[in-house]
Image 1 (cartoon, rainbow, N blue to C red):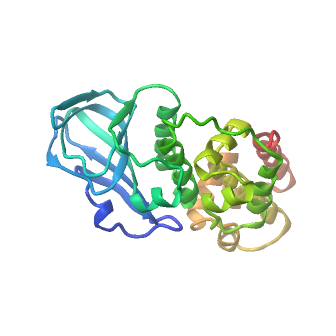
Image 2 (cartoon, helix red, strand yellow; image 1 turned 180 degrees about the horizontal axis):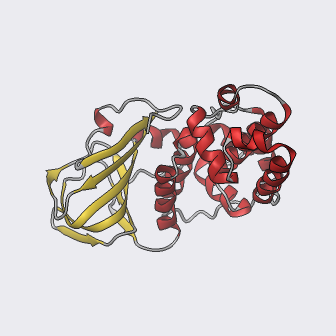
Amino acid sequence: MGLPQGASQTTNRFSEFRGETLYKANFGDLGFHVSRFRPNAVVDLHRHTEAYVCFLVSGVLNERAGRHYSRHHPLSLIVHPAGEEHEDWFEGTGFCIDLTITSSWIARYGEARPVSLRISFDRGPMVRLGFRLLQLYSQHKLDSAILDLEEIAAEILSFDSRQEAPRTTPRLSRIFEQIEADRTGSVHLNDYARLAGLHPVYLARVFRRAYGMSIGEYQRHIRLRNSVNMLASSDIPVSQIAAECGFYDQSHFTHLLRRSTGFTPKALRRSGRDGFAKVRPIQDRRLRHI
């Protein structure tokens, strides 16, 4: 898997994970790392410069931090504070997806609380955030991962907030307008928050609660819909359509379109009117409640 749009090679603060690295990239002040550990692997005492979240996909993970010992079962989400010394050992083969949330990213989101304590979740909405990380990796949706990862980080940082998320407001319509206008997918969570007049930490929660999908998911649906319209109405090369609609490259575009509709771009064009008549209702069903 190549580097997605907006990602860059990892630097030291994102290179502190052990095991066999399956994928790694950083997105500004957020890092994404996927690793696999051999059966019964032991990770010696170490620390991470920045706070991070681990979604344990497989294996039982034992951790000791000072006098504190914890045992995590598969499909647990574990939030680690920056600078915490800990050692790990696995039972069975371990598979982890990690999201690094730097202090500089937290500082930009003023009401987001720094991660000061280790805490883990094995059920509820926080675990669903872990599944979203797994989905981004397993479905190769990293072409627009910046926005998705920002939303996930914001929701994680607000998990202990007692402040109720505000009700949806008409100002959210400005987000839809911006997504329609921005074909490159370059707008970040902070930008959408300013448009909606909400704090970024709460915007992700409000949007998902109101519309049943994240802003990043909605953004992808719109880009796919725009690409289908271009395929139907022009002879523009598929590679150019992929670039103009903000996809990382033609293969990413082809992969997402096939997962969404069952068609590759070329097969959809060859199918003519019948194919487009099948695809558009599929897309409309995903977006009709927005």
